[in-house]
Image (cartoon, rainbow, N blue to C red; front, side, top):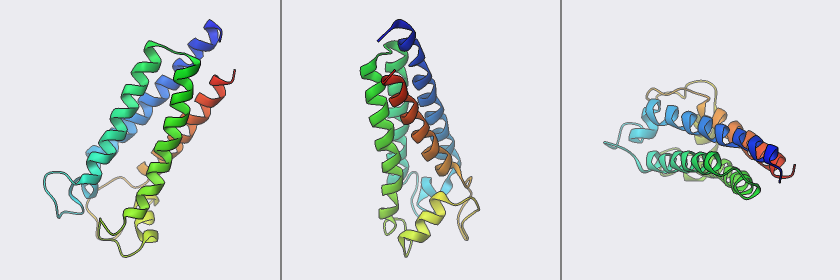
Length: 146
């Protein structure tokens, strides 16, 4: 891989930082995620799960920005695709958070309007994170194959 291609991989590091910032926005603004809809203090296990994905994002960004290469682009491409799958798979945990169906939990997670009788959060942020994970993965695959 040429030096110019390695430099282009910096874009993936920057996208991972954007993924991290979106994750932070969710962690700080979604009071349902923080407290399992008001029943747990101080933080609910799902909050920690999302925190781990944010830590993975920032570590991945640091590695790519420190050593951009075909290998780091490959890891970023596969890793962000897995993180996108993780967000979708979270729907299967609907019983843990008190939802009666997977579809109602999916509506909460990926809806663009506030879910009825929920605490404050910014609807649509999970969608934005999911899309950015797909963008990050696509860019990383494309740059890896350059």
